Length: 280
Image 1 (spheres, rainbow, N blue to C red):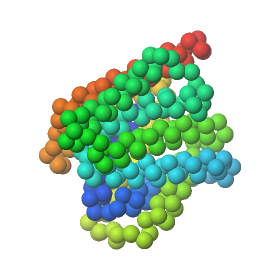
Image 2 (cartoon, rainbow, N blue to C red; image 1 turned 90 degrees about the vertical axis):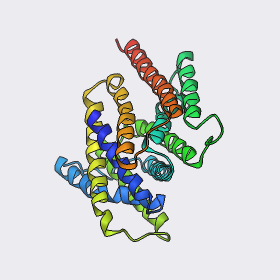
Image 3 (cartoon, one colour; image 1 turned 180 degrees about the vertical axis):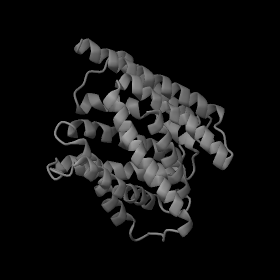
Image 4 (tube, helix red, strand yellow; image 1 turned 60 degrees about the vertical axis):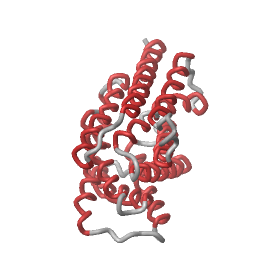
């Protein structure tokens, strides 16, 4: 998981660099297109293309739409936010997943979990600057929308996993995202600069290896143990912000991130205890 978080941090850095020169929708298209050849090679190596068309198409398309919306809003937010600020807001995703699981998956959520969800939302408000000068910025709201799309996509993935293979879910998500994002960004497409080729290579490699690492993490370790390591992204964000842009998060960002991380870890631990009680 630590490797996955590091890879995704590098991927987000590449997206932030690209978002300074290209429209957010084009950045989404470049993200999907760059990783697709590597993913196809991996699926061929695994011999998993057999039965690739035997999927739930409606749910696959729904996830692709959410994926396009998530990456586009996140890329848009990165134009005005530092990585640390964006990560701090995005950390609300586990709380949103827990809340959505009640309505979509009919899972039971106790009072303590609802309190943790509300506390997490308060943490987001802290990151979004309660003093008013930067309250509800467009960039902040864009990242919050990205977190909501990610949460809905995670719930959809849980439903899809009951019938579709992991390889088919990864393949169709990237393929549909690439096709959809290219179609939507075609009219405003900006020619890719030659000097950005290394950024695209970094984007492809980091996204691909990050996906492999996170899949391995959750397949070999307990979610309650593995998931909290996702919050190490904040350390990567702070370090990269300082090295590349000479910026550091302010007190509100760190305070809000601490609140959100605490609520997220509580939810992950609480879910693990609940699962063990059901299956001793």
